[in-house]
Length: 289
Image (tube, rainbow, N blue to C red):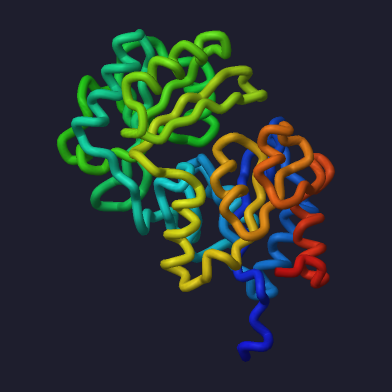
């Protein structure tokens, strides 16, 4: 491929839930077809999602994606074809224990995500401080993931912890968020995301300075893609960093005004194939640097 034929925009970092897949868990053929056309045009199409790689196996297979993708909100960079971790932002064992105690002492079942030290695949453990939220149970079943119940993080995984999280009813989230910020401050990165499908809040905690944008930067380093040649598309609070930092970014039309203000532009909602509209404009040469 000659330099003249290399597209200016080298990669698309696309969120999954609420962006490519609706809150009703349905997807649009038009969006998937558009991303495949972008891939065939020589643009690196990467998921940039809060899910782990195993939870994305279906969309990845449908899109025929390969190369590095951004998972677990930037804490894991994985080979999309195999799901194997290429780079992870691990937290220390002491910090993981402190977070487990913070949630567990309040009666919450803590879901611990780690990468397997031998296979590089994501794996869950659950600290048994209380009954898991129904949304946790349904999500694990739907994605054929298991969460081994533990009193402590198994020794082999203590240097491989990537994320700790809980699921709570909406009204329970604000006081937990305030207490989390008071105890941990800038020692961690965290967010609380509302799930319309389950009507609950998902509170997740990572090591400090972790976001989809830090994941995109790492992905670009691995793929030898300039980070300023990435288009980001997203819709929720965990997309803010990449919408704000990408040279060109699109918030979905269904995103709240708070989220939309961080994006360069706004596209249509997921139900109106907003991703496909971005790709159509890109491939038509209408998205200039």
